[in-house]
Image 1 (cartoon, rainbow, N blue to C red):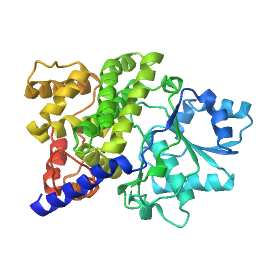
Image 2: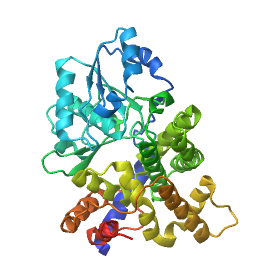
Image 3: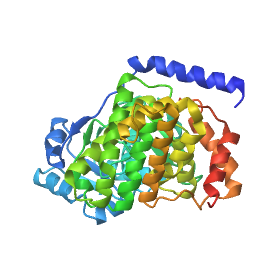
Length: 401
């Protein structure tokens, strides 16, 4: 990256860091069970709810407890279950039509990050009916209050229940972009472990490593605060303590609850401190090839951490202590190596590969430009890279070891 772009990026990031204390960040109010939602909905004077989910979650019966709870409370609702793994502009338009046809005044995002992102985008369209989603991409383009927005995560990974971002894929161009604004932060997050009990081990693993990526990228970035560092460390500790348990025994309610809270804390950390090049690369792969976001993050994370080099060793040392894979007596370099090795070992235990075979050589320059545009100048990464430098990661992801 040339010196002028580096200066621009760092000045931009410094301005945001200085503004953090006065920006209207907030944490969603935690609700412990789906059973408590009727009181929440009535308390916010809502009368009809749009539930945004996907067909897999509905076919597994995960929405049944919510449906029965609303039926018993005589609260009308309608369900949109067409959300795909990387939600598209078509998904948002279809859900929005249901919202309007049924005169809804509240939205529940029920599922993983895709369902919650779709729900947020619907809310943004309600708040700004004269703007397209593309016109709202970027930072602070919504600026108006959304309808009551409740997030119910069924995976412990995305942290979308805490964030101000909705990531949407253009159905025509397949370009993936983020809408970032404070009104998109859900007002309530329902951390109910019972809705996660039937998740298969593979999704449990990749979404858990998604949460780990959020915590790590938030912690090693250059825009941290005392609170985001604390939340990130707490998330890393909970993940390393519980992810193997929930992978082996998905019915363990306590471990599931701890993973939901880990995802929540990681989400709170990166909402303020942002992520980095792992996410920028993963988003481009999700948009182009529909690679699940958690899987992409899990594959890419150790590669990016190694590329940053010694400038993050001190921070990785603290993360390694939180993870229980190093101690204070180790050098920063030794602890950093232990932490990265622990992530690689985790990947192998969960049968997560090191490559993404969908990548095509001819697509790499365009994908790298997308990642560059997303990350620079917004993400306060430890080491700045341009599109040409990012191309090397895509090429590494193509190689067969």
